[in-house]
Image (cartoon, rainbow, N blue to C red; front, side, top):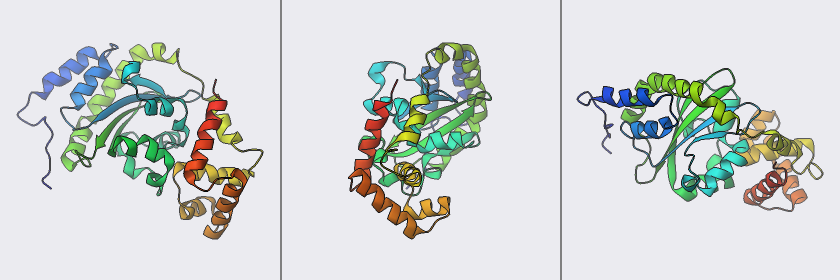
Length: 268
């Protein structure tokens, strides 16, 4: 397949587009202007902008209009983020920059019910994240989703995003400096979700089984779980069998359904 080229090139006046961004950097309209700018350097179908702060659930910066927010997006912001690869990458201290979901997701993530619900049902085949450190406690992500019609991101588009990343990161930080108080005052505690991870099936599963269940929901294969916990694959398979028996489930999808119901029961 021929390499696509971004719509901004040496002959375009990209400086004017950046100037518009600069003019809006401290205004609430900045995310929408940023979305328009990104569409000139990379093809995508969906765009969301999220801030992650310790002790709070993810804060949706764009889109803020409820009519533009899908049920899946609300599920992610309110609950499902706790098993999302990007959230865990940020929590683990991933370096800022341009990162594809494919490079950070667990080995069996595409087989999870979470992936089927939040990604495949929308036809997304690739996700690109611009990870920006806003301050010591807050990280922002600009997430671009691509459907099958666009295929995976091209090398030229990745290069364009990487080339513009320092400028975009600086402008996003300025936007956060001017608008953070407004967003943070409406931020919701992530306490219930933290409790959910610790208490899911606590009266049914052992501590080790709950630990393995968390990794299963996040998309780790038996081999990956064994490697992470430093136990044998055979032991993991025994635990998986016991987990299904204790929860009266037979598939990962059924465990996911129970987990989401548990998250809802502990919500604020």
